[in-house]
Structure formats: structure tokens, C-alpha cells
Image (cartoon, rainbow, N blue to C red; front, side, top):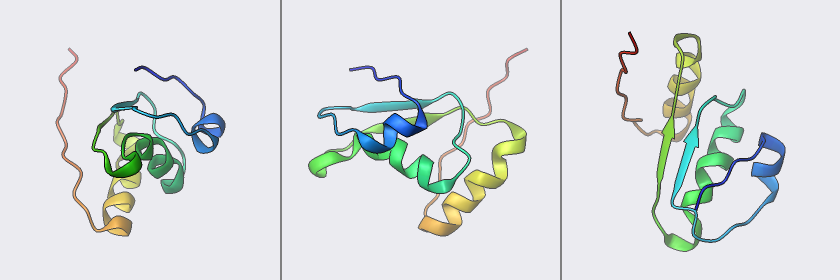
Length: 80
């Protein structure tokens, strides 16, 4: 299933069986990120979340890791 939604919609919907979320832009707040990727973890299920992050968004990733005491796996994509 593919779901495309704004931050407003992403916070208020409950759709079953979303197994992957792709963030092509990061939300401005940590809670927005958690709500987005939380679409994959409903009812004890597991899922994947991928995020495209620019250099100026790295502080948000660091804040997420610190707040939730987790490590987000990172991979640098060479686009040249």
C-alpha cells in the first residue's frame, strides 16, 4: 500500500497494513516524524521507514535519536 499525505492528514488517520513510509521531506517537529513513521507499527506489526534528509535537517535526526534513545541507520546517497 502506498499512502501520500500531508502532516495534517498523517496525524489523524488510522489505516491498516501500511508497511512502509517514505519521507521525502522531514517534518518540522519530532512529533510529526513519530506520527508519520508510526503508521507502520500498528497493532504490534513491524514496518520500514525511509527518510530523505538534507544537511540542514541533520539536527532534527540528532534530536530524534536523543529524545527516543535510539539510533537511526544512515546512508549517504551520492547523487552526482
